[in-house]
Amino acid sequence: MGSNIKMNIRRDLARWFYVDLAGGNTTLIAGSGRSGTSWLANICNYRNDFRYMFEPLNPASFREPQHIESWCLSKEAQSPMVERMLTGELDGDWVDSRNRRFIARRRLIKEIRSNLMLTWMQSRFPKLKIVTIVRNPLMVAASRARLNRLSDGSEWVWKPSLERLLKEPNLIAMLSTSELALLKKQIGCGIALETIADWCINNLVALRLSPLDGTHRVYYEALSDHTEATVKALLEFIGVPYEASVLDMVARPSETSRHQSATNDDLHDGVAAEAWISDLTEREVEVGLELLDTFNVRQLYTPEWGPVHE
Image (cartoon, rainbow, N blue to C red; front, side, top):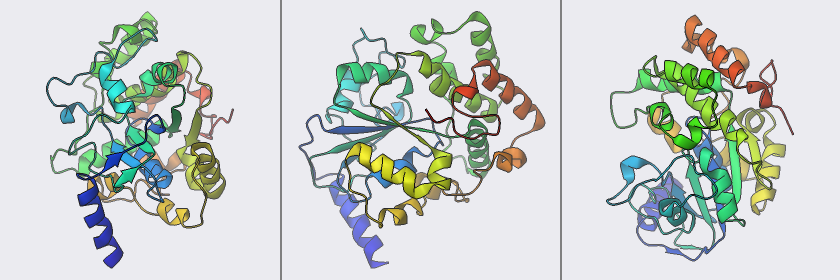
């Protein structure tokens, strides 16, 4: 109890009183919503080594005249807002809400809207460490559907970015006519199908951009089923020492899990392929699988929903 009180006091102070000396020493955690990004960020920051920036690209947190020119950036594009994020210039109630570091020489950014920007980021910031997390899309859809059923209508209700993304010229240029039509059909068809369509864009279409060398992919399922080896490889990549105490952080639900859901959704429940059956309708599964097959989900998952390791 006492340690929790101290942690909360520290976080309340550090969100306002901190010094960011990280320079170019930045690690980005990228993934779709409900894929475990918060869980992964907490694991990376288990020693409180970083200034933790939470979803700086959330449009609801923008202050005038902040805006994003494009959510699917070509290498030639200019994006001052994203540059300011990666250099630590963005701040505010939302962005720093989970920071607990007063003097930071490293920066950790957790963002669920950046998958179509990663190639651009890497070309502009070659020292940036990028960690992506991927989760079974049917589990992501089930998690989102379950969350929305539990929601009381508060601000935690999340809507997929599908309609916004399908207005992006750079994204449309990567899609065939039939792919674009199939994605557009899902708009307004319910949270589960919009979530799966959004997942296809952010995880499969994103692979069509230039290959990302020097990034590290984490599978949610591997983090749950092969925890120690997965965590060791992750921490080695970002340059954080491995200590046994990190496993306590793995076992702890993320803030989004605690606030948004009555289930321990960001822990070990429901990683098996059949776990989503009770949360999705037959039609949602049928159309969802059609979407996933169209965009070649086998680049990331086997027919048995095991991770495809490179």
